Image (cartoon, rainbow, N blue to C red; front, side):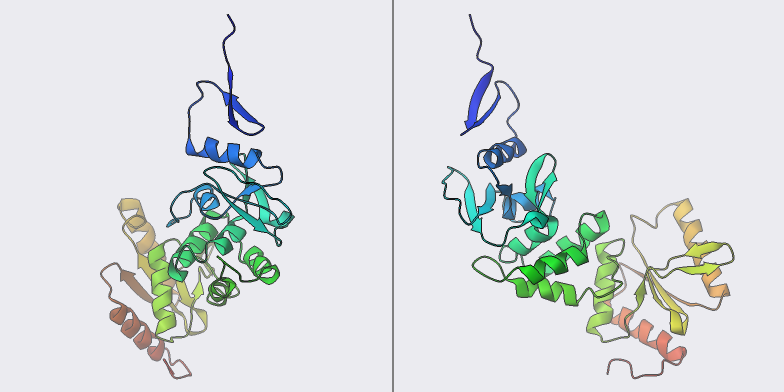
Length: 271
């Protein structure tokens, strides 16, 4: 007696009988059932591990000339999709991180999209240059607000570093909102044969700031490394500032302002 080993998952797509049913396999079947399509929008956000991300649903993007209907799948027809917008992620043809971010501009707030972008930059799966290129060839339309993407790019200028944590990014935002001189992130400072990279630095004034979060600054080794860095930089003439989760926004602004004034910053702070 013959045993059935394949089952029809989608048109033109078959899977092994007994294979585990997962959300990712379902998405792959949807993409394979429409030639030239790619996972997009909230589906791509899950594939790229957006955090936060929209509600999970199957969504794919196809060219403008494609007319199909797939039960349980939201289909987007795009005239701006190009080769640079498509990549393979976990074996699934998916819109790029940058294209996905652009397609989610009505699904997530600007603040949430900023968190997603910075996390992608830290993980090495996003690029500001690729996002800029994407923003230049795409237009706003139903479901997409490219002005949000351009705003994210403006606040992340040349040399932007996403930092090691969201808390560091919060401190950077505090500096920006207080209209303090913006620091250099992860500035390389060589002292002797050792190179240090403080979280924030104003090299022209020899002032640096560190944010000590519990995950990265707990334990004997972390304490010794932190002390060595602070001692070496201070001995070399740098003025240190250390902030923690207990530091209020007001305290961060006041201490930074005082430190920069102490080093005779030649312009009005907060003007």
